[in-house]
Structures are given as structure tokens and as C-alpha cells.
Image (cartoon, rainbow, N blue to C red; front, side):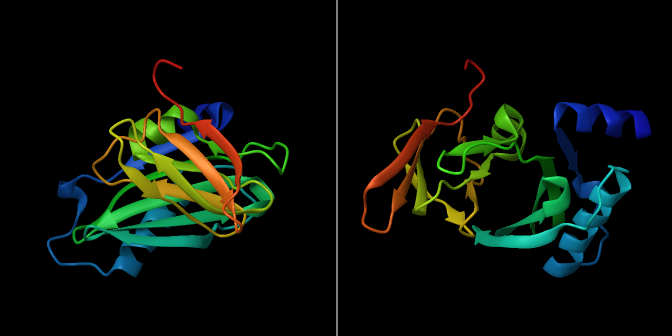
Length: 181
């Protein structure tokens, strides 16, 4: 298991999930499920200096997504769950870059495995949204620094992502990772 964690850290991502058979027959609270997700993260034996702190909490379509960040480690971790408890988690390094640029964390692994876009909100941006290949627009959430665009059951692959300032002026736009590019 330690070798797997080392390989995962080397490439910058970790993925873990719980199947329905892993969920106890009794209902767990959302807080218990989120704590279980963080426990699973801790069991990966990653070389982290601090426990991740929750930065964003979303609820959609009967499910929830909690985004945690460990600042000293540049690590971001998302836990997704619903009525049955924790369903999956995704973690990756937060790549460094210019503060005025829109950048993604986790690349295609985030898009494919977690069906979400995680990234850095550029300086001056106050909103973020994605126009999916299907034409649907999804408004993202942010904490002023990191953003998440979560689309349960819908692919975010190849979405056009736009960060806008408070005056409505587009600050940055880019295309979400996809298998072909």
C-alpha cells in the first residue's frame, strides 16, 4: 500500500471510493461520512504536514461534495457522498502558477474519475462557470482562491470555463481537460 501511495503522490493524484457494500446497513450522517472520507485519505500514508481543512461544501441532487485543502502540502481533496454515505474521494497536488491565471488541479483524472473541475480562481475573479459540451451551463463555487465545478452525473470533459470579475468582465477563459487534449 505504501508503494501505491508513493506512486500516487509522484504523479500528483489519488483516487479512492467506497462501494455500496462498504456502507453499513444503518444510515450515517453526512458529517460521519465526510470524516470517513478524510480517514481514508489519512490511511493513504501521504507525506502530509497538516490535516486538510474544509473550504467548500456543496449540496446538489440529494448528494454533497466537501473540498478540503492542506495548505502546507499544496494538497486538495474532494469527498463526494449522498444518503448512503461517502461514495468517492479524489485528491491531488495544487500545482503552482501565476495568480492571475485560471488553472486546473488534477487534470483529466479529476474530470474522468470525480466528474468535477478543481482549480485556482484568478486574481480579481468573483464568479466561475462552465459551459459543457452539451450546451448546459454550470455555475461553480469558490472561496476566493480555489474553485470547484461539480456536475453529478454529467461529464465536464472539454467544458469551456470562464472566470468573471464583479463588473461582469471576463478575466480568464480556458478549456477543461479532456481525453483527447
